[in-house]
Image (cartoon, rainbow, N blue to C red; front, side, top):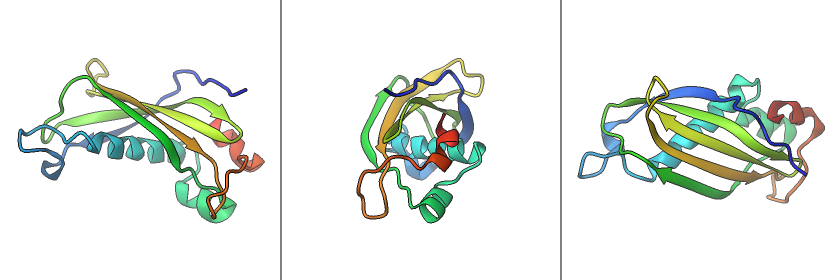
Length: 138
């Protein structure tokens, strides 16, 4: 079975750029997944490992196999928000990240989401996470 994590969130800020908005002036819906990726990368770096290091040093990749986003409130151009990221489930062959996009005070939630990943080798073959990497995900 997998391990469920606590509320150990990593936080990083993003600012909605003009190019990320639609004709109505709201953040285009697909950009939330991009911001989730920003949060995921920051989560890993804040714990001492980068995606690049996992790929080059350990030949371990984390393709997304499921992505979900629940839009609560619209974001507009030039808003600065927090992308809060945590691991909600870890298994030797996969991991689930959860995300919240909130205001700076963490009072207003603009979206919530998750991405599920499997661990693979460089050829895309599923594998167990190398033992050296387990501490970064637990």
